[in-house]
View (cartoon, rainbow, N blue to C red):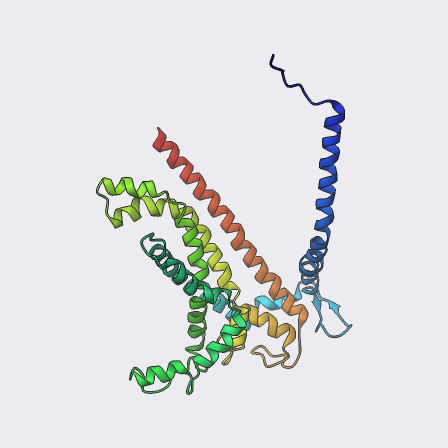
Length: 330
């Protein structure tokens, strides 16, 4: 005779709930150290940065004066800040398209199942990504040296240049040199994003299209690109965000020079807050933590706007894809 399962008795259900509650309490207990670290090193500095941006304070004295929004008003009229902001935008406008397109080409090649050494090449392209930016900056400063640098020596030996190129000492060339190094270092990161996106394309789609006589261009146009479109928007925005944060590379290669030609906004913030040196806008030899905090809050707001734009773009793309899918079903 078969037995019909019955609902658990109240004591059993009560014991199960007690076990779950105990487990949850232990989870929260183990989260406490991480939460404390997050409060101390993430949320507290964020809140205090906004407070410091309202002060006239060097950061090393006790005579902090509340001045309200004066730092922001001064920031709006500071040509050095806007020059640094423009260089950061140039990093994005030049570096992001090059990285995205170059990484896509590399990913398509390395995604080919017939390429036996694809894992090896992926590792080679990704090694610069996991290498510390400061280390790469120091090495590249030596490689791009005007006279003893290996790059200039090779170019001279091949007869491509008559005079050494001042990659890092010419104000007209230095920023482009740093952007080039940034592209070389970070392209592997974007390549990984593309590889992950390419592996979501079902192989059966390609096989069916090839049976119908579709060539590589038609495969890319009608199969690969429509599926990659949502990923492309996310990858572009993530790449742009990473190009906005080039402080370590710029600081280790040029420290914002020569003549402020490579001073991006993060370097501007650092030098204003902690490096009491020369400045285009005066105040030489004086650190200005309050003013630097205002610049940092402004920069953080721009980054937040990009993140919000990312979420909006993803939602719009998903809506369009849903509409197209519904139209195709009809």
